[in-house]
Structure formats: C-alpha cells, structure tokens
Image (cartoon, rainbow, N blue to C red):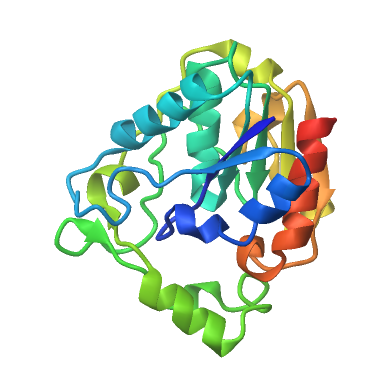
Length: 227
C-alpha cells in the first residue's frame, strides 16, 4: 500500500528519512511529502496550497493510500480524508488531533515577518521531548523550517460527512490511549468523537517518534496499512 507521510510543524519530508526504509522493507511504498512553504522560500504559501499538494499525492497513489499526519498535520490528513473520502483507505494520526471546521490550523506561536519560527524547546519540555538528547534537539532546531503565516492561520473547512466513516488509527506517543480518550469528547475533539472507526495504538516515545523510534513507528504504520 502507498503510505503518504505528512510531518508536523517546522518539518519537511526529510523528517521521515529513517522511517521510509523500514516501511519499504515491510512491503509498502512510503511517500514522504514536502509541501509548499516547507523550505522552498514560499512564505506566501497557504493551508489550501498545502492541502492541494496532499490531494495531488492522494490522486497519484496506487490504489487507496494510508494518509499519515503527524502532530498539527493530523488536520491536513483529515482534510484530505474530507476532500477524497472515496480515495483514502485509512488515516493514521501521530501525536495529534484534527481541528474542527472553522478552527485555525496551527496558530500556536508568534508570527515574525510573515512566518512562525520554531519557538525553542521551552514549550515542549516534559514528555514531548524527554527522549531527545541535546544532539537531536540541536539538529531539529537547526533544520526547522519557518511555517508560513497563511498556513498557521489558515481556517479549516470540512464539508463531507463521509470522512467520518474512514478508519482512523491514533498513534499515542507522549500520551497514553487512556489520556487520549479523555480528550476525545464532543467538546474537546469533535471530529474524532464522531469517527465511526477509531482505534488507539500506544507508542512509548516523545512527540517525534520518527526521529527517536523510527523502526517501531514504521511497524505500527505497516500494521495499520495491513489491517
């Protein structure tokens, strides 16, 4: 199966470099995506631009793909399911929850000169980054791609209720499935609260398992694709 990989904020397709060979070895075709505004100098890129790139990958896939969204990109994966409900086999969300219709995509940190830079590690101290050593933190920070304002402040629009019938796998890295279930309520996470087929998978890692546990993450994604 084709597995489309969408990394979260400040990351491009290279975030999956250690996951890709593992998925290939497990018999799948991983497709890591680098989206408009991720290192191409397009600070004018918008959320719609990024969604169009994801949809192009869905349309180009061989058969129905598994669409994987990490962190904030969980919303992009869910938007793809909404726009292509007949073409997406399953959605896997890693450490993130999709925004609801009318919410902003990822307006979390200060915008500077039209983009949102990586804010440093202070906001992520604790379970998010506990498994990242200093070398890994330095590597992440030096490679971080500023998120265009039009992406971060883009408004989520969901229009097709058929997305709710697409199976969803929630990979729980820095939080447990039990903690996730407490958050998934009609008020806290209405999209997943309404999902007809939602399963939880535990992964003992921080927020960026593609960097710290790529083999385990690849195995979980392959199992999601195979099931």
